[in-house]
Amino acid sequence: MQNFIEKIKKVFSSVKNKITELYFDNKKVFFLLAGLFFVIIFCIILLICLPKEKKESQNVYVENHLELSEKPLIPNGPELPKDYTFSRKEKEKWTEEEAQVWFTEPSQKDIDSLSKSNDKMINEIIGAAP
Image 1 (spheres, rainbow, N blue to C red):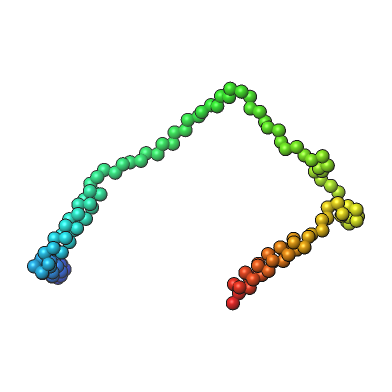
Image 2: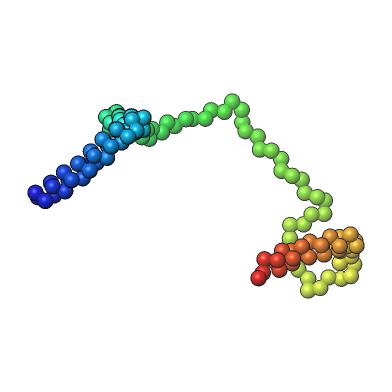
């Protein structure tokens, strides 16, 4: 125990010596550091001493009854096209006439645009590869 007290005395004496050296060598810096030290101590004391606000959780639920002045109206949905079907029977193979109704021949502009976008994706993938 005595050894521990001696070590503390040595530490405090060396700190005291450094503070007195600073005071005599550069008084402006000494007072600046001393002022900052007291400001920090003051802020710590304020944080400890000021009462903390207790936030009480308010789990109070109030039931509000909605009273409507008029009966709610359900809007009309979108109207279906004339020849719209919800389901169909799947066939193994379409006839040439049925295919022509739904098939459109792509233009050269569409083909070129698709080719450019595919080339762009390929270059992006290849460019990232080592």
